[in-house]
Amino acid sequence: MKLAHLADLHLGFRQYDRQTPRGGNQREADVAEAFRRTVDDLLVQRPDLIVVAGDVFHSVRPTNPAILFLFQQLHRLRAGLTDAPIVVIAGNHDTPRSAETGTILKLYEALGVHVVADQARRISFPQLDCAVLAVPHQALMQAERPALRPERGAAHNILVLHGVLEDIIDPEWSVSDYGSARLTRADLAAAQWDYVALGGYHVLHDVAANAWYAGSLEYVNPRAWVQVREEASRNVPGKGYLLVDVPGAHTTFRPVAGARKHLDLPPIHGAGLTARQLDEQIAQRVAGSKPAIDDQVVRLIVYDVAAATARDLDHPAIRQYKARALNFHLDVRRPEPQRVVGVGAPGRRQTLPDTLREFLGRRPLDADLDRDEFVRLGVEYLDRVGGEGAEASA
Image (tube, rainbow, N blue to C red; front, side, top):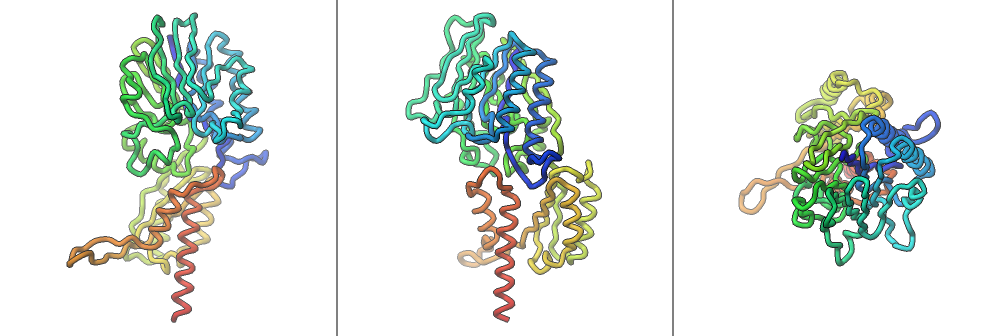
């Protein structure tokens, strides 16, 4: 049996101000395009079973275009793969705070999709001699979690659930950043399953030989740069989904090309540099970008830059970079002053901008807000107030 494992589609995700020619948010269109390309590949690969491990939508109340788009793509799968069941579970983004509110995912049952939104449910597919235990986010958030045990008598037992293993979180994240239920390896007991399909963590990750996070299909978190760094450090080939041969749990990663790149340009260390020297280095980083920054999502960190130097940068040139890229974030960071701690012990004191940056970096935001830009503006306003205060006291 060939199983396709998808997760974290986050359809309806919006970011940045760029619009499509038809007036929609460009990043929302990028996320939709990633899923459309995935459906294209699924129709070629022809799996026997498709499971989607949660966070189909980015919000409980997705946009009308996102609702319609998912309907169209699932209809394509049902028409092209008539014998392949589709199992979809709700993730934390799909789960309303009130049980009475209901979930839009139930709409897709009209297409013959198996939707599991609240309680854990076992679904048997006799034609595949397979049983799927589908465990949505809400089932894992209850005081008494469901027993995660395979079905006796089925040749193939698949566990699908949405939650985050605490021991794989990148140090810059916390479980609360994801908002998913917490899991341990003991909870999974992966050895008793033929395959465990996990959702809720956005980077491809093997938990065991037969248990994987497929990762998201696009960068759908305002702190995407943490994911970019993690993918680079672990040689993750990018975004996509998994094809799994059962039994044996032999996995094949199917990459899905994104509409654009997330480019984290080599940082600049600005200590002792003038504004003009910094302008030159920024221009060099932009010119050396591969691919070019045009229509990409770009970040460039510049360390140890005084507020006065930052104000003297070539802002018209920076605006040109921003016009070329889908989003160009010049992350200018202030020097960290030293202080004496205790009896002559050198140490570091967190500056007010750093404190603000840390606070805003973890503050819950509406999905439509760009966190990087939110943090940048907060620090910029703080610097402006500080500069005005200094001028007044002078």
